[in-house]
Length: 293
Image (cartoon, rainbow, N blue to C red):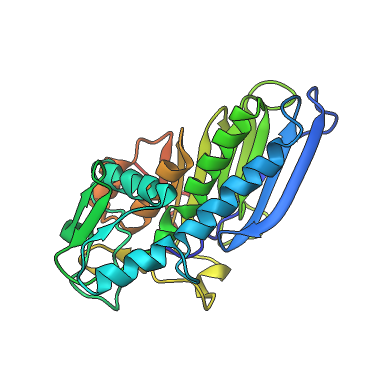
């Protein structure tokens, strides 16, 4: 159910911040461009530690080269019970398991058109014993929560390093901020409309929070590496939608935004709260901006 999230969230940071910019780190990871912007104090190696945290998540969860996730998938596809030796993989699985109630089962890292009938409902996961097994062959894809999860680990590394003001971006669709804006107050963001250049879908503000934007419409939907978005138990989702979610954790925000895109109307209405979780109906017959509440 993963794949790239395509809508861009652009900051409106003003010049001459009250807290001076004290570092920036840009690098590729998690299949996208990562940007870490630090303001004010903290340890000298804070950004290096945050980068290492993101790269460790990438190394653990990638399914595109040998990793803890590919070793796990080999076992699950063969129908074997698997111990979970990697602490990052265990953390990711625990968050996914916990999020099943939060997302009303609409976030499913197993959903795959190539494996009909598979799904998280067939998984038996024991976090305390660090063990997982399934009742039918399946494989996991962490693309629907990986960027937000990586930002969570980077935020923790920055906080441990004494950083109290920072902006983190993964592909400009998963965002996390530490503290207030360098000028004080909330960090302002404008979410572009994925259909219309230079048009804003919604404006929001964050303080010590994360943002995730998911869409099923826009130019990047047709990218060759983008996986289809799957409604668990039903099939590919084609309705043009854009979901915007704010949460304390990037992983939760990303799982919820993915869930909103694939949910049917009834469950989408249950997931939305009209303020922190927004779903926009972008069908041509709908009004230009239609937040589903």
